[in-house]
Length: 85
Image (cartoon, rainbow, N blue to C red; front, top):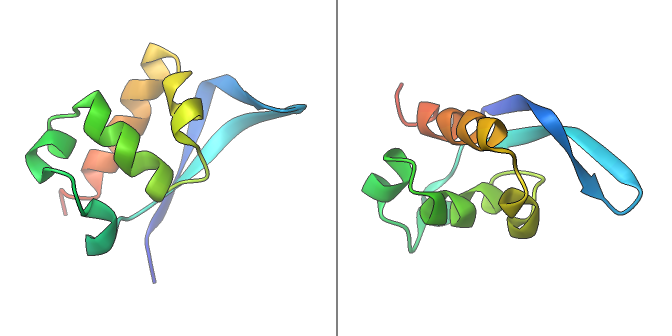
C-alpha cells in the first residue's frame, strides 16, 4: 500500500469553478522516477519536481506552475520526505 500525505495549501488552486485547498501526494514508485535525476528531485529542482508531482498527485503540471512560493516549498518538502525514511 502506498503512503499518501495531504498537503494543505495556503493559497487554493483554481480548477474551473472549483477551488482546491488540499492536494494528496503519494509515495513515488520506481517507474514514476523514470527520466528524472534523483539528485535533482532531492535538491528540490523545480523542473524535476514539476515533472514528478503530477505523476504522484491530483495536481497537473500547469497547476503546479501556479503554486505560491510557500506552497511550492511545502509540496517539495513533502516529496523529499518520501526519500528520507
